[in-house]
Amino acid sequence: MMSRMLMGLCLAWAMLQTAEAAPLPVANSLAIEKESAIAFDPDGGRGLVVFVQNGYVYGRHVDAMGRPTSAPVFGIFPVVHPTRDRSYSKPSVTFKRGQNRFVIAAEETETRIINLPDGPLALSFPSGIAVTAFNSDGSRAGNRFLRTPIASAARTEKRPFVVADELSDDCCIAVAWEDEAYAHKLYVQRLKADLSPQGGISELAPTGASRIANVSGTYELSRDRFTFVFDMIDSSGRRWIATSSMGAFTGASVRSRTIAERVGHGERSGDLLRGTPAVVHSEGLDTYVVAWRLGTGLRAAFLPPDITGTVSSSFAIPTSAPCTTPPFCFFLTPGTSAPPALVNAPGTRRVYVVAAMNPLLGDGPAVLDAYAIDSTSTTAVTPYLAAISRASDGAALSAGAVWSPGGNRVIATWDSAGPTRDVYVGDLLP
Image (cartoon, rainbow, N blue to C red; front, side):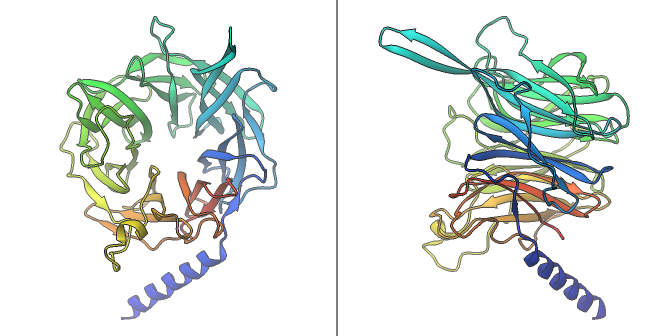
């Protein structure tokens, strides 16, 4: 009885603390801020939020509690200001231990003007993946530009994802990206800490893949391995959540497989894939947890650490309360239109799923929900941020989440789709 009373007091205190923690905008500007992502420096006790504003990528540091620091917003891409005919989007960020560097990758788009008899015509197309790194003192450490190694001008390098190992050496960083429109492949370039290449560009995809999109990844310390998940269409038009892994240092031992078929989500097989999966390795569970969006809901599965073992059956993540007002539930029950983020809680058997839930009709503010996954079941956790934006902001896009060891909490970023159009940052688990 006493333990239950103490547990109740702890939960009440956590909820009280949550009410006092207000989400904060990363930048104050009239420009639209979007596509945010976050990484954390566990040794320095600070995170870096990156976001897009008017075709450029910017960054700002946050402390262990998820509060923006007094240091101002700084430019990340382009490397040299100003630039002509270049814009940047879809940034991804990771932290490389040892060198204490944040590494950022983004999709670069080039715009060309063609003079026609009826007037000029502007054409925009992806031109490569830009990569840069910043030292702990804020200085830029290096730059790299990546292109798909195919003998054709028809290249569409898009949606990069960057991940680093957790060792204090001069390697290993992996930058993954897709060529969904032409080569239909997943590419990975491993880099050293100074961003010089470590081996050549690898092609990772399960046998029979005809289209690849929406890659994300994680690093597993115990096996020194990078593992990536992505949406895939096979040669027969079936849609899958799939995975590929490789050794972080050697690039060898490549293993690929499908995880779950994506059915019943209302998309045609020829459409651009929309699952946008996330993956994290849980040392406590000694397994990979994979989550993805399916329609307006979320699903997850367990992937064994050897990659080739049996994948668990996928299960639904309880993203909403039971319906109490039929037949209006379809319109009033919150659903997600954004991909989930996964966070491993070190030293525990728990992985947190973070996702923005929005009412279909936009009636009321969106909420950023956190859910816990353990080895046997999913347990819905009380949303730690109720209204993540002003009451007039009726929607939000979940963008990223990370664990803060010093704050002992999850810190998340999201893009407001309401009138403010700001990037927000806040703590989820006080």
